[in-house]
Length: 497
Image (cartoon, rainbow, N blue to C red; front, top):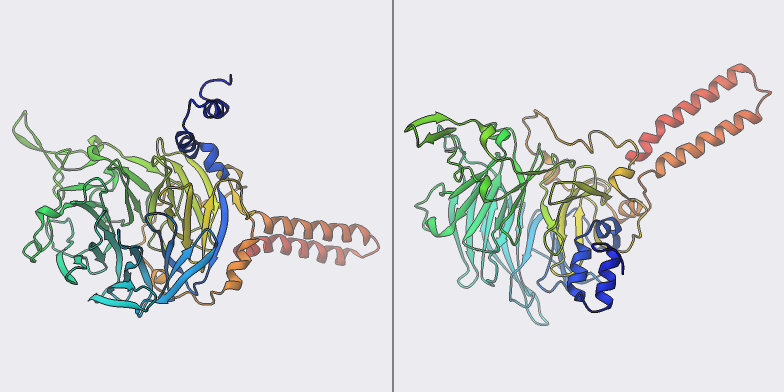
């Protein structure tokens, strides 16, 4: 019998009936071996612009994508073909799209850079019926669908507003606008992410252009506009960022256990749990004071006394609005895209970075897991969507982090200390100029070290030519050396291309 706890022991237990196949599969998908086996299995090509949103339906049979080309595509991702596609009616980029639950995958809601929230109903054998719910002056970045409800969802956008929608009466209600934490001002912050707690849909989290994640209980917020700025029941923030007002949060995700991921734009990704709440720790947000019950006095609180959340380091998140997500059957891993065009995967427990994989020629923005299988989808600036799975890869660019030779310190730095006052640049909404299927296909064969290898081969050829040209004078040999140096300098340019 194999040694206990090994992979071979698991195989043996499965074969003799001691371990149920589902449990064996889940154990394998939660292993490092599985993550190391991940690779691109399919590329889905139909869009003509950046793919800003991807999501699976509840059964996982369909994948929904939205793009800068203002269209939606429903994919039969296993076959690698579009089941249907149509224009959304948005006049600018589609930033987010979601299936509504229990609707037969025929009810879809979308948010766009044109400030609109739309509902699209696909009729049996007929046209797509589109309803526009709101038209705001700023982009609507994110939607959150209430778990288990085919009618209710929420939105947040660049004007700081949070809206509640009910499809039954085609109702759109503004709940509140999100204000700055600073007690001296009621400045509105931009909102980039909203997420609902799957265990308790009464709770939803918001994040935007400051360093705080705000948790709300919808039962404690009026829906008639009386609660102008909302009333968070909890705030979350890494201790070293409290009060700094130098960062923002572009992505949020809940696990089934109530854990919450937050992806900071100039810092790292953090995992918050209940004990990291500032109110839970008697920290009054905005004043930095703590009541000492034993002395009956108000004392300054040192942020060093606050618990530090688990940190996930290595990616870069400064150029676009990126999401963050859990991976694995038991949410064992954390995944995110990066400005360097790679997908980063960390182990949730301990925060170890265990895989870095090439996912886009420029930037990866979305990573979305299949609801039941060991599959996930990613998208970004490229016009294609990548489907990832275990068992090898079609793409030679897949590499483990420790296999990357001399990684660029900018792309793989463990933290970011940028003092730039610009939170987001125009890369978020600007259409990609020159994007084409041809460009994307160039990425199919682009390996991490292929440019260097080509450069080395060229250098070798030139050296061989130099050896054969012994009769050439000193001036010509000097020219050859200069050409060789130019070729070495050209390797970096080839990598950039």
